[in-house]
Every structure is written in C-alpha cells, then in structure tokens.
Image (cartoon, rainbow, N blue to C red; front, side, top):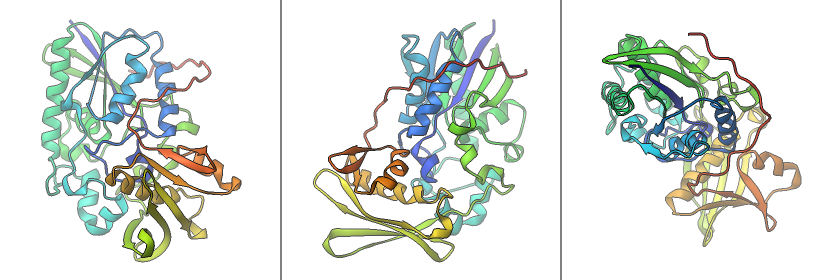
Length: 344
C-alpha cells in the first residue's frame, strides 16, 4: 500500500524578503508570497488530498491554507516539520552573519555536517526529526495522498537524505524556491523521492529566486548588508546599513503610541534598484515587533507610494501603513492555467 506525500516549501516570508535568518522565529508571508499561494492552489486543482499537515509556524500554516481550505480539511500541525533552530543566528541579517563568521556562513549552505551555532540544532538532528515526521504522516494515512508544508533548509536536508546522500553531499545540492513542490512515495519502510523542488507553477514575475543571487553562488554568498543602530534625541532610533565597512544607507524611526513611524529612509544611488532597500524596511519591522507594535507607518510622496505598496503598505489617512499581525489573508484569484506534471 503506497502513501503519496507532497512536500511544499512555504511561500515567501519576511526572512526571505528582508534577508534575515529566520529558523524557528515566527514570521509572516509577504504580499508576493500570497501571489505564490494563488499559483500553488491552482497547481493542486483536481488533486485529491486526504489530509494536510505542516510545521506549526505561521508561514507554513498560511501556506497550507491554500490546500486545506478549498477542500474543507482540517490543518494538522506537526512541529517535527519545523525549520532548523538557528540559535544565536536567529533574526540576524545574512550580511551580518557573513561578516561575523564567514566560514560558518559557508558551512551552513555547503558543509551542513560541519555547521554549528550556539543554541542551534545540528543538521543531523533536523534530518532525524524530519524523517520521523514523514514516517508518522505515512503511518496515519496508509494508502492516502497527503500534503505537508515545511521549510527550505529542513526540506533540503530531508530530500537529500531520502536520496541516499550524506550531510556533506547534501551541501552540494540546490535549493527549492518558495512554494516548490516535491513528491514522496512511501511503501512500508521504503521512502522514494519521485521528484523534488519543482516550482514550475510559479511564473518568473512571482518567483523569489528570480530576485536573488545567493543560491546561484558556489559558496552561497551575496553582498549582504549589516546594521549599526544608535539612539538619538527625541526618541529617534537610526539603523545605518553597511556593506563591508562602508555606510550605504540608513533608516530612522520613532515610537508612537500604536505604531512605529519611519522618519528617514535612504540608500546610496549605486545600490538603488538592486533590492537592498527592502533590508532597511526589515530593520523597522523587526524593531516594531520587539516593541509589541502591530503597524509600521510612513509618509511619502505619490512617486514612492507604489514602491512601498509592493511590500504590503496601504494608504491610510495620508500615511502608508504596513500591518504586522500574523493573520491568514485571502489568497488572490489568478487566471486559470494548466501545469504539466514534472518528469518522474
């Protein structure tokens, strides 16, 4: 009796967009991530699913909603499918990690067998719990077809293991884009990878990887930013963005009773249009959350309203407002298209 398990990486979340290390930090899906979910839902149109599981973090629960809500199924949270716990790396920018410990940064992507961080899991621990999670799902759904949502590093580790690779060998494999789909077939003790990391349902305009370069680099590096913060008069906090040791941008913000207001936002002309500015907004979002605030607000001219709108800001009372609440929003409708099955 064969059980089929579709594995789905979560849609684009704040860590992916802001280039911040989010392992078990509980971030939310971005506006582009919701567009990816529309394509994911469409991909599974007509596919029978008997159950939908997933990591219990918000970004995977939201991703799973594209599959369980249309079928009136219950979501089955399974913490075994969580992302790797990153310890002291949690909520650091990838640029800061690369500057702090470049060797361990490379090991995270290329030599997971060697990677260590204080307070973190090892990749061997992730491997073992992910395999245990798959076996639990198969045991609970004999002969069924199931979907399960999980995370990039955890899925890469699981899929490589099931294909017979050591952790060192897994470090030489690729990464799946957001909402990439893989398929397992489980029969008794045997688990077979039918296909993996297929994101053919996501057009280039909605892809996360099409906007990033780190996954194309042999050492998985990128010119990341790191930040130096300072507190000035009138409660203004400023985060300076640095590339290597050169200041290339800044964001200033001040606490209001119910929101964090961005008062200054700038990046050097040479880096504009290269998706570095969004990392500045990431600093504001993380600071607002640490203060227990649910909104980030700013005032800008009409020429910049479209820029901020693509990252989730909406006009409100003369300001642009970003809602930080961890909610499952409505997944947008998209034109119906047909996706071919990946080759087995």
